[in-house]
Length: 290
Image 1 (cartoon, rainbow, N blue to C red):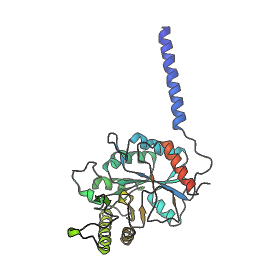
Image 2 (cartoon, helix red, strand yellow; image 1 turned 180 degrees about the horizontal axis):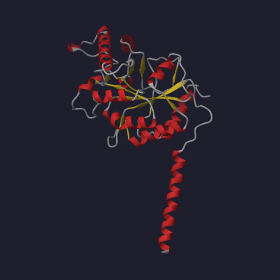
Image 3 (tube, helix red, strand yellow; image 1 turned 45 degrees about the horizontal axis):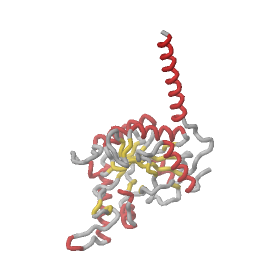
């Protein structure tokens, strides 16, 4: 009997100790002073999945932990519409964060979207519109048209923008959006042909997404983060007013809205604490710290 009591007491002690340790790790007190003000940290993700493995894939547990930790540290998540308003002169809360996803994978709908709803975090997904009509054959399946419509109709602060229609690829190792393409007989695409190709692709994207929503379709993420002066000019001519890169940094109101920096949060090695520390370092280098 005494042995049983000792086992029970030992078990209870272990449980209490574990609970205490978890609480000290998970609970992160919000700082008394803002880390940065009048600027926005834009986070970048790609794929949230339990079994797939890549440098751009994280598990749902890490995704939830990152968002929860940032909330506890005093970060405030804003929507794409609030980001637009900020760029055009509006205000944002201190430590403002915009969550973005690239590629429009179906894992966003099944794995990331429920967590965003649970934590009341807005987000925008940059979708490759040509994939809307794929019935199979891709290693990572894209979101379907009905899934996109369901999200847009269910949660006002979830946005779908675009990531080109048919330019998320490379030719001879170079991103087709950012460079002129080789033509038959050793010729190269002219500057005018190149600009028209980018312009036409962007117009197709806008048309596809406008058929799904009444919200503005004016935001874009450069595939592989690559672009050129001509590509940037062409997508602006097509109606894009906010274009996102993969260059690290904190976005300020007076920075170029066609080359918006982002912070890669979607690598499996990035713990919640590492993500926070990285944002702080970028904010300091941006001279945005209070």
